[in-house]
Length: 362
Image (tube, rainbow, N blue to C red; front, side, top):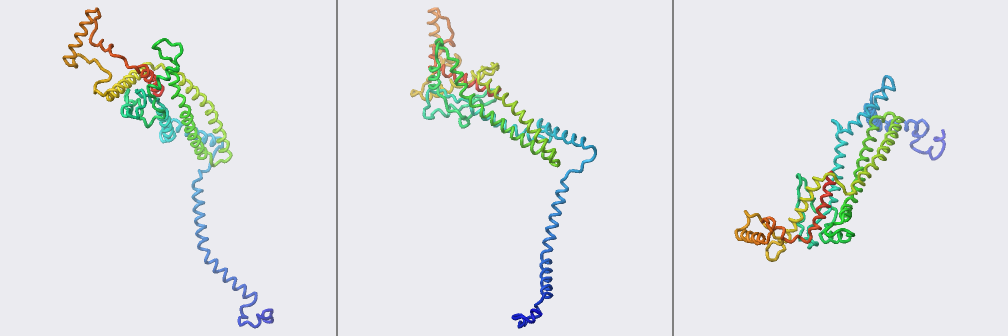
């Protein structure tokens, strides 16, 4: 009656559309259309959510049955066995040990790069000696002299070694090399070892922390309170092991700072090899620099290899010395060759480099 008697609705040609009944019918039709449009999408979303839920339910471990204490003991035992397997690198548990081995290789390389780079030349001759100084000496197949690009320390030349020896002299007898001079040269490379040791330890510790974290989640994740307690206990044990291990590493490192070795045979072998290497490199370098093309450091050769004229001169010299009461052999004539004025410096360099090699190998 309101729409029929009230303007402007009473004068509208669509009076059949007014009223509560007509509005209800119209809204019902619109709602049905919207439901029909949305229902397929809603059904698809429900099926997807149901599949995801079933997949997650399928990942749940089987329900525990029996005595709870026995079940707990079985889980803890399995956790300990897994940790032991990865620690020992047992079958199908090699990943942790292999990753640690890669860290140890990086540590070995870092120590190797700290080797003192002695060059058997007085000064740096504008890098003219590079080709010679990078020769490699081998003992038991091991490269004793890493490539120049791998070394962290700057080249040390004989003049620098001589200045260092002069600054270190106190009450030594003539021709005696001050032992503190060798110690300070050794300390130049051993003092750089603390950082690689610390980095190696931290890398291994971080890797073990991540491994234990993932394993605890895997074995105890279904029991939130138990997982929290186990994680706290394991972290506390790791902290105890860390605090016990670090002082041991520092003690071992401190022992390396005091030059001493019982591996005398290997040290002596390295010393001879390095000294021969330095002498040969220096002789080759001086020979190349000789303007006359003659040997800068002469050698007396075996009688079977020298020419006849040289051999006759040697025999005449021996005869003359015999008349003076000095009975010597041809090989003794080598003692008449003037020694290299840098022999002491090369000897110190060989000894310091050999001690590094001995420490590195051990």
